[in-house]
Image 1 (cartoon, rainbow, N blue to C red):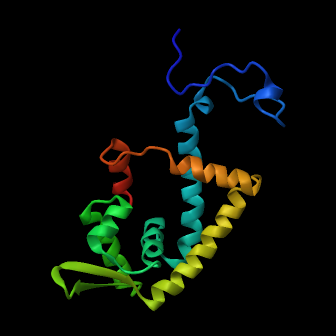
Image 2 (image 1 turned 90 degrees about the vertical axis):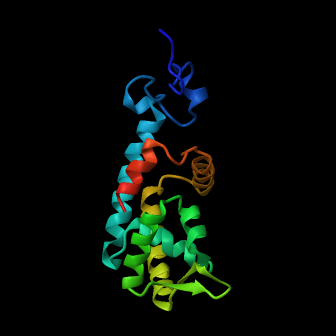
Image 3 (image 1 turned 135 degrees about the vertical axis):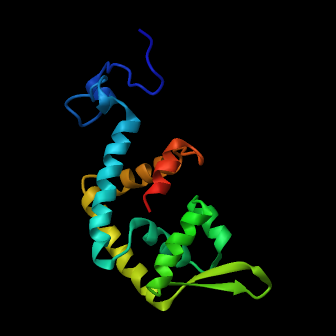
Length: 176
């Protein structure tokens, strides 16, 4: 039987392959599929973040928009490209944030067709609270990881390919 791409090979030496572990992970079943494991943990992480942000009344996507704008104003098109969302999705996100006076859109005086999006003072204050709430969630989620392991996980996840235009992106855009 041919092994699927990405499937774990049978463990040969538990202690050599997995220092500090008594047993190697199972090589069959859903736990052996990295994408399913990532999806499970991703869903649990999103639920924790949503719960932490509930008091502020923003969604994780709102928080991401605010955090991007906390570094300075951006053109609306540039912001959409950074977020990897359809322009109509971005408009809905910005409308909700603008209604709460967390962001402001204005015409670019140099190019009236272009909109500049900037964070308000209230939005900047919200980012401070959101960042603290997300930091608390991360501390809880990654309590068993060393600082070096957290850095490694961050580095690896940053390299995972999630191509835009895939079925995964369509599902993510539906939930904003």
